[in-house]
Amino acid sequence: MPRAHAPDDTSQTAAAPDAAAMLASASSVEACVQGLYVHVPFCAHRCHYCDFFTVAGRDDQRRAFAQRLLGEADVVLPRIPPGIRTVFVGGGTPTHLPPSVLATLLTGLRERLAAGGHRIEEWTLEANPDTVSDETAAVLAEAGVTRVSLGAQSFDPPALQMLERRHDPANVGQAMERLRRVGITDLSVDLIFAVPELKDPVEVWARDLDMALALDPTHLSCYGLTYEAGTPLRRRLDVGRIERVGEEVEADLYECARVRLEAAGFEHYEISNWARPGFRCRHNLVYWTNGNWWPLGPSASGHVEGWRWRNLPRLGPYLAGAGLPHIDSVEHLDDDGRAGEMLMLGLRLMDGVPRDRVTAACQTPERGATRTTAIEGALEAGLLQWRGDWLSLSHRGVLVADAVIGDLL
Ligand code: SF4
Picture 1 (cartoon, rainbow, N blue to C red):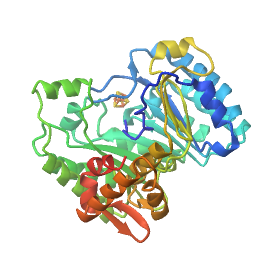
Picture 2 (cartoon, rainbow, N blue to C red):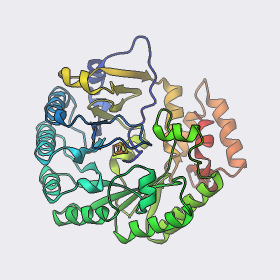
Picture 3 (cartoon, rainbow, N blue to C red):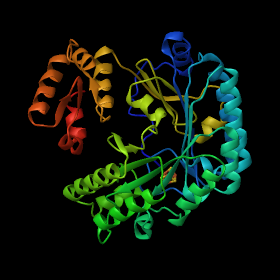
């Protein structure tokens, strides 16, 4: 599934407030919670590159999970002032829930949001291509889902095998057809490049892009494969059983995506995301513009006015509890930390960050001077650029974005 979930790099602090304290701050009208993230952790199988909180082999808990999550929503949603405009149901594999359970969960959420006066303008749900039956598609349409993000990852059987993805490449087009038939036409496709041990990664990637474009999605997310600590894939890398694709080849693959997708009329609006005009993911834009969103479900991360937290990533305690879940880690950013984070997230966007916000971030007492120096250095090196009154990563800067942005925190 996509790697675009809410940031969850929170760190534990001694006097961590609980979810009730977060809710109290979210209840203030000023806070304006704009998005809701819902984490459904169930998967048919755990892919060996995945480091999201997922559970496989616990299918008997799916119905109880839906009820538990609605119980959490019962406590949260009446307290949040009307203002939620986007919902993102991710995972895990939300479509691994049986249609009747999915219907209970989504309809229950929709009713609770409506009762709270929230007018949802974009409702995204992540799906694996082999889990979108006609019945599931009908449930999504009936529940008001407006956008589906499909975890295609590749159309190349050896690449899918290397990723331990079990679907057939043909399932992607079949799923899109079923969704379009029920009226869900805002469809995003996720792809992964730099998969190791392929005979010709450049040719495979070019074909993947062409096949995705042939399905006419509104949005594409392209991620370079990452080797996250603790995953089986990382262990295979560490013991030398696989060899990662070289940095130069990876840069070529990224460039290939940039050229092909732009030629096909897609706007490159975030480092890893391209959209047809008018189809940017509004929910993810809440993350990248440092907006406020509330998390529901185990391991879901949230942010309200400088508070970032993550719910405990464990299914058992979640199901055994009621109302608000336990929080695993929480962090409160001061003004200086928020300025750094604004730059870190804002520079992921191709539009960049407006001059007045850059100026403010360069005037904070602690890191302001260091940031000014780092920005000047990156401008001189051609990694950052001013376009009018917006500071953004240059063409070259995008390729080393983590290093450039890391210096500005
Ligand atoms: S289906 Fe997606 S969320 Fe589930 S294990 Fe595989 S990559 Fe992770």
